Amino acid sequence: MSTGSEPSRHAIALVLVAGYAGSGKSEAGKMMSQATGWPLLDKDTLTRPLTEALLSHLNGDPDDRQSSVYAERVRPLEYESLMKACWENLECGVPVVAVAPFLTEVVDEQWATRTRRHCSRLGAGLEVVWVDSDASSMRERLTSRNAARDNWKLAHWRRYLAAISLDRRPVGEFHLVDNRVTAMTPLAEQVESVALILSGRYDEALT
Image (cartoon, rainbow, N blue to C red; front, top):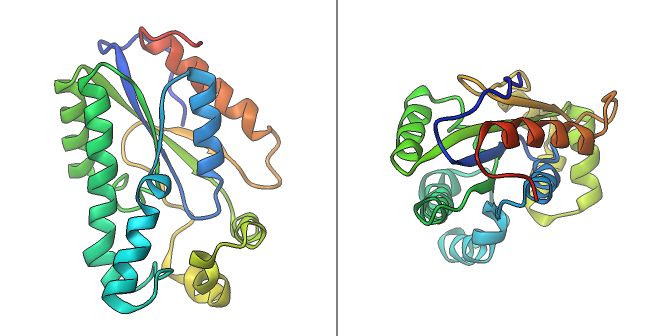
């Protein structure tokens, strides 16, 4: 749900653009960065080369995104790197648009509370944008982008869908973007609407 444009007591924002693989969150994140003029930090861009090298060393598969090796030993490092980059920007008074699945994080009330408090100490507000999609739209995007890291999902599609919940939503307030292929409103228009809400909430103006 998108909330209103009431002013925030914070001057800058940390905007988390989250969603499942193939939801279109990277595209939405880029649009959000362009609409606000705020820097974009994408987890894959920041960490993928190191992730692939580490996975190759640990289990010989640079495209592994489903094993316990990735989940327990690599994924936490990816998110630690992303969030540290976010904190450094906020410490410098620079708002951030951060893109990653955040699947575990945004449904964890304790994580959300800690993150919101950390943001507040840095003079920032936390905004979560959930990019929603459906199974057929996600599969179409994953097939089109033809990335090796998606091969397992596509080869075991029913098993993958059974392990996730397309009804997942972040805890607390968030902005919902409908990026199904059948969505009535184009993604760009939806992101622009959220960007306008954020521009009214924070002191930073759209550029």
